[in-house]
Amino acid sequence: MGKMISDVKSSLCRPKPTDQVSAKATIGNGQPGGWAMKLAGNVIASGTEPTEVALGTGAALDGKTLEISATMKAVNPQASRLSLRADLATAAGALDGSPITIDDPAQVGDSAGYSIIVFFQAAP
Amino acid sequence: MIRALTIGVAVLALIHSARAADDAGGGSGSGSGAPGTGSGAGSGSGSSGDDTTADCVHSPDPAQCLAGKADALPDFDKIRSPDSPAFTLLGVTPTQIDRPTTPKQIATSLSGFVSDGGVAIPKNLAVEFWPYWLFSHPTLTAGQYQDRSRAAQFVENITISIGTANSTRTTSDMASHTDANLAIGARTLVNLSAQPVIPCKQSDYDQLVAAAKASMLTDAPDAQSIIQQLQVAHLDQQVYRDKLDVDRKNHDSDAVSIDEQRLGDDAKIIATLEGQLKTPKGKLNAGIASQLDKLCTDGSQEARQGFVAEFAVASSELFLDSEVSDHHYGDTAAWTTIAWESPGWSVMALGRYLTGKVIGADRNRFVDTGARLIRSKDTYALSVELLGRFPIDTPSGSTLESTYRVDMAVDYHVQDNTWLTLSFGKDFSQSTASSFFSLANLKIGLGDPKLKPPSQAASK
Image 1 (cartoon, rainbow over the protein chains, first blue to last red):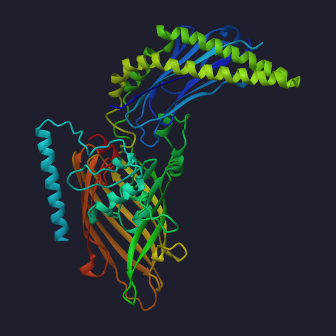
Image 2: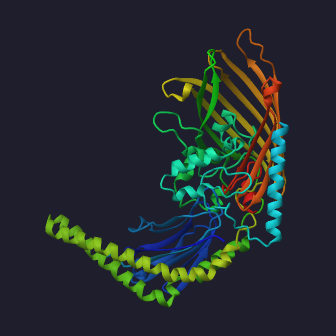
Image 3: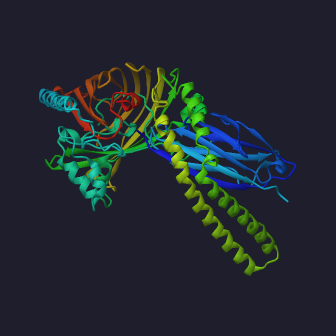
């Protein structure tokens, strides 16, 4: 039985009020996994491959919290790592504080459950 | 040859009977010979399996401890080495046609730490590392990894190996000298038609997604207050980040100093709160851990069925009397192995160009061609290998003729990660009396046997 790795990271992002914000979760290092996004208490997307998820405008996101939760398993013996990366962006590019990455060494058979928490505050 | 065969059969019989007794007694297989988490390669005694290198981790002098264990090994154990190109060139691998494989990120043999120190070439050093996987690749998904182009595989699968081996030389005054051979090699692997035999099933992925939803930290009651504190800390940090920008523009060094101090304090608070959140996250994960343990266990991304090709090059340097200052260009080889792999059978064909030199003589050039057949079962693997060596460019007056090598090798699963590998046969040497060789080794806690694919061995 492999070990279970738990890790949490957080960030503050400040999009402009009119900017459309998107988020993308990537489970890296060639390892299989699943992710889910919860915005302000509602699950808005889930999957296994990286997908751009539209979150809304900066004004609509002001004060809200996004959680990206992911579980994954180390089956790629070459990588010896498990990782989750969250990219938050607008049409103008990546937001400050993004990407947020959790990256831990792991052996084949290990699993990980990660959470990345993003707090939004509309930029002045 | 007969003596080596007798030893091998006796060791196999002993281990088999010990394991049968263990099984009959309901043993869990968690004996002392299964370090399990050890890294690198090593050897142990043929019967007990309790002489592991893991003991040396806690030794006040690990190098001395390892040296002592190496000295305690039977002679046939000392010649065990990884099947990296460097060691294939040095001629100390049990077989010559190696199964194309994707080696571990870094493999270091036990003997690699047993060094004379100083300026002497270390004895029996064996290191192989994978440059691509020395670094994390957080944007490389499982799908992208499996669907890599052949060109990408060729580049990303390159490994570098370095090895040394000693040889004894007798000079005209009958003095015996121990020389060191240092070889550097590289290899890469490309899947031609092979596909994973059983990758993670769609139901596995569905469960991973479900587990991600079920372990949302923002749903955990004991995480709420910490998340709120975390938000406050981030907002406070942002206030001082904005203030810092203003104070820097105003060249207010005192204020800048205070801002930087506050930013540092907030960063510590955030790190502490994130650390505290690991507890509720860990509780959530504990609820899904047993479920995750069962996922993606039917196969591995290393498992393949179809054609694979390995390309390798290696070159060696000879250090007379193991002195760094007295070195001579040794052998250079380049070879390709094409293999058809399946879970039960593997067939390999080898083509190799080799140029070698004996001190004081001219350089010889050879072409090796051969084939190898492997039969894999759950607890053992058998291999038969035949190689022909054909001189293509020998010095004038040379009488070198074509030679051949034939050998049989067996992997036997002892318990847990412990595999015994034995090899017997006739080497390339034209002298019949000296051409019979035997190589044997008990590999402990190191994961990969010599013959079986790692994915099959890992399932044991």
